[in-house]
Image (cartoon, rainbow, N blue to C red; front, side, top):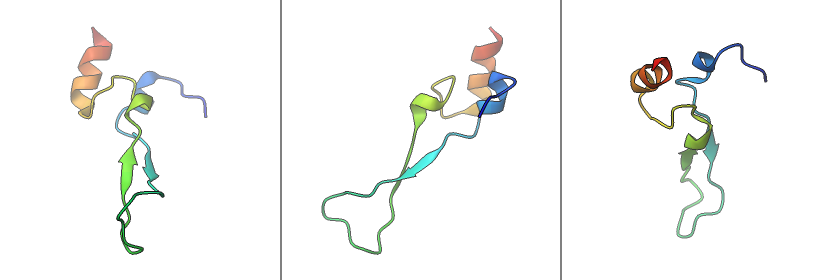
Length: 54
């Protein structure tokens, strides 16, 4: 997917389902955020926007 602006990427950090975890029960679902895809490497969209505008 091609974005027109880096601003379109903020606040939409993807999640992935973690499949192979030791000691997890079958009913347990654990997801992780892929932070390296976030353009500002921040979990706070406002802070990321401020960093881009600098």
